[in-house]
Image 1 (cartoon, one colour):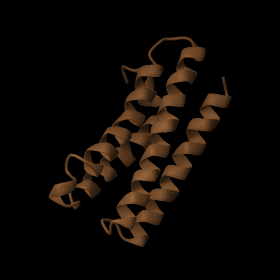
Image 2 (spheres, rainbow, N blue to C red):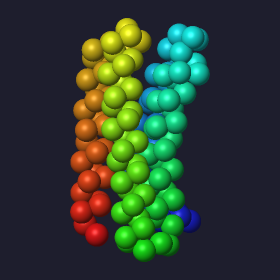
Image 3 (cartoon, rainbow, N blue to C red):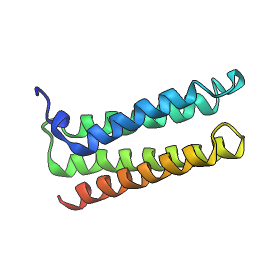
Image 4 (spheres, rainbow, N blue to C red):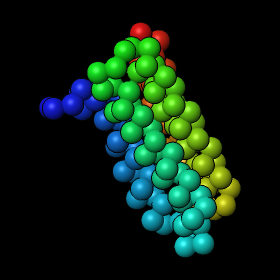
Length: 116
């Protein structure tokens, strides 16, 4: 693999979740396209992108900062999932599944940050 981030389990997990959220948002109503749909997609993309950007040959201190951004974006995704559930765009089973997966991702990001 050509880039360091491609070997990171946390990046792979974030990318997999990004794909799942993208599929989920295709079921949201059209009137949410520029509201919740756009917001959750930006947040999920941000998690993946910040992990990758932070890993690119910078200092561990700088990488920690980017991991903090990724962590905040992951929390934003979880909050968007709550909104989607409240608005009836996601059922309880899918909510719980994604919630648990994002909880795992947050733990992974936190552990990686603490390892520096």
